[in-house]
Picture (tube, rainbow, N blue to C red):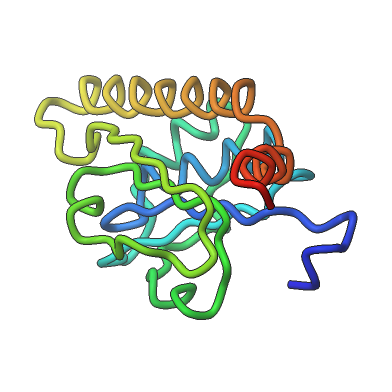
Length: 164
C-alpha cells in the first residue's frame, strides 16, 4: 500500500474467524459490495478450512454475491505483512485466540455471530440457519457503515481530542 497521504487510499478491513469458510467470507463479500470503493476488504482464519462451506456459497448467491472464486486464507498471510486499520472478529473461538494487537490497527471490533456450520438439523433447517446468520451479518455491516463514517475523520477527531 502507498503512503497515508494518498487521497485515494482505502483503509483495510480484515474479518477474522476460525476457519474462514463462512462468516468472515460473508462479511468480506458484503462489505466489498457495499463499500468496496472505501475499503480494501480481506478475511482470514486461524485454522483455515479446506473450502468455503457450500451453504455459505448458496445463501450468498441468493443475495447476488458470488463466493465461488474465494478460498479460506490463513491469518498468517496478513499478520506482519498487511496493515489492517480495522480488525473485526466474527466468532467467539477466534476472539479468544486472535492476536490482541494487530500492527497498525486503529479499531478492533468483536461481532460474535453464531456458527451456522455447527447447527444440527435437516438440510432445510441448516439452510435457514445460514440465511439467518447471513442476514445478521448484512445488518451489522450496514449499521456499522451508517454509524462509523470514515476512519480518517475519526482519526482526526481523536487526534484533536488528545491535542495532536
